[in-house]
Amino acid sequence: MALHKLTLPKMGESVTEATVTNWLKEIGDSIQEDESVLEVATDKVDSDVPSPVQGVLKERLFQEGDVVQVGDVIGLIESSGQGDEQEQNSESHSTNHEDDIPVEVKDVPGLTDLETVEESSTAPSNSEPKPQADSSDRFYSPLVRSIAQEEGISFEELDQLSGSGAEGRVTKDDVLKYIAQKQDNPAIQSVTDEDSNNTSADSEKSNLQNQSEKRSPVAELPKAAAKPVTVAKGEGDEIIEMDRMRRLIADHMVSSVHTSPHVFSAVEADVTNLVNWRNRIKEGFKKREGENITFTPLIIEAISKALKDFPMINVSADGYQIIRRKHINIGMATALPNGNLIVPVIKNADQLSLVGISHAVNDLAQRARNNKLKPDDTQGGTFTFTNIGAFGNIFGMPIINQPQAAILAVGTIKKKPAVIETADGDLIGIRHFMYITMSYDHRVIDGALGGTFIKRVADYLENWDLDRTV
Image (cartoon, rainbow, N blue to C red; front, side, top):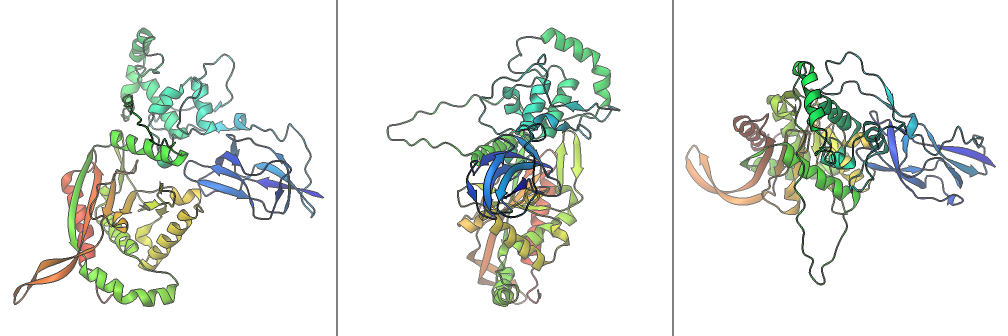
């Protein structure tokens, strides 16, 4: 008999840790090779951790809610083959490694003038203030909870933060930025302490005035959300609890509307050439590539071209600073079988051929529906595209996917009678039309820029080359 170490596998280039959300196997359960043993969550996606061997689960070294670093041993599996023998040492296999996680605070917005920032352990001392009991329905990773406990931030305060993680999750950087803002503006108080400490807040604000004036301005924290409306429940009404992903989506959407003043533009594009070209090449494409070519990669290619023409659309707002993104990474809103939504990202879309974009679209969509996305697949988006036409909708105004500045939607393609201008005069003919709409952040994108950009996307689609080869 041998003991095999079950380790947290690499979750992506920029992912170093994950939170254990659910153990699928109990100690003593039999496990088949490649069978899922537990579920973990990053700030972006949930994933399963499979067993590399067949055997029996002997020990679970982390509990649900614990943060695990990539490469950490999270369990021991006993098998009949040869493996890595491992001593049962309680000191080397702690069931809670939360105290060992360093908090990195470099590159935090609002701390640009600080010459040095001391690293602090996330282990709270008995004399430090602790946040109130967690009565929030929002998901917070143990690292975020640990930082909040270290800094005396209550869950009521955390609930008011606008998360920059997937589906609005509050990340470590969001908490550190909030801490920096509290240091810059002591008038920002915990909702539980707002009736006290006013005198000390004014005094400290005066002491920090000179220092805060030197720092670049940062976005104001979101105001306290309005109290939820009490909804009357009638006889026979069914109460359905939101799952964790739906709660994250709900929080993210409310936060986005609160953060960005949305403005909208719309155009109607004659995509007859595009439709006729796809109908002509789709069978040959499927035989050669082994998959269908849909309208989605064609539209994403047009968006990437337009973003190169108008780089100030490919931006994010950070207080009074505009971050112009170097890479064009287009998120593709994808509906899941359970009704929820996820946005996998096509990285460097402007550098891919049409065939490459098509492969990326099909691969990400299939893995999203099968819950096989990796954490890196949903990170780094700079612009989002959603195809509401897939559901028969002709027109829609989507909500911006923070921290991006714009999201574009296309409706279904419909045949319509239209006036066709020719050298011999105007004619009435049947053409294929599609509505294109865009929501954008009026803090950084004005109507002229937004309207010109969306028209450029339409131009690329309308002027499709019928003789193009792929």
